[in-house]
Amino acid sequence: MKATIFYGSPRKGNTYLVVKKFMDELLIYGNIEFSEFFLPNIMPKFCIGCQLCLGSSYENCPHSEYTKPILTEILSSDMLIFATPHYGASMMPACMKNLIDHLDFLNLVVAPRKEMFDKRAFILTTGTGSKAAIKPIKKWLKHLGVNRVYSLGFRMFTNKWCSMSKSKQLRFEKKLTKSAKKFYKLKKKRPYISTIFMYYMSKAILKKYVKEGNYPYDYWTEQGYFDKRPF
Image (tube, rainbow, N blue to C red; front, side, top):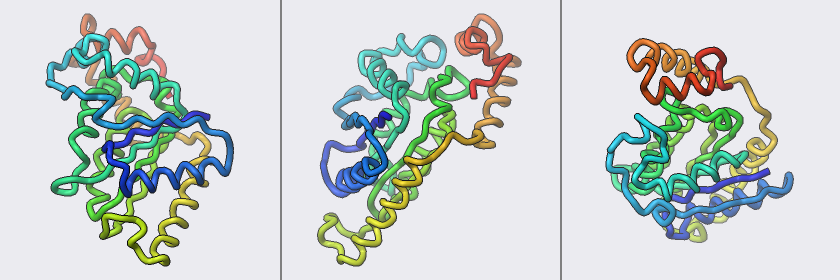
């Protein structure tokens, strides 16, 4: 089994520590090959909103030298783990949003990949704004068709794990243990209702407004998505 981890910061602080504990728990249940990537190192260029990846193959993105290896890594993984701190206004850091912007062509209405519908994802974060940081990432992953998306946010109220009380550390570690077991043993389930709805809505939009001769429509035709669901 393979898991790819995207860190929303190069800083190895609380969120990094939580991920390491989560990885250790996962390894209890079986062999996992982990690939770790730190933002913004793996995506140093900001999306410029040119929309080339929405109207043609993502390979035409001016930053395709970065998106290509990231996409290859994602498609070859069974598990995706997003580890993000939260910054101003309790939001995810800009580099994490930038990754999402560069990969948004994977959403159902443009060029979804069949491989995404077999994957599971987990979002981990620490800090008082955990819920606000998690929400948009979870929504985006569902739009990509990911079969199940779980999350865990720790409101620590401190900048160091070790400065928390032992009882609080133990409580958080128990949550990690329980979540890791559930995540590893998860079997593929019926797609989210929102995924099914997005598929049919995208199908209708492409047929009515985009039509033949335009990239998303032609991509769907080539993949056979108009006749058979990709999940």
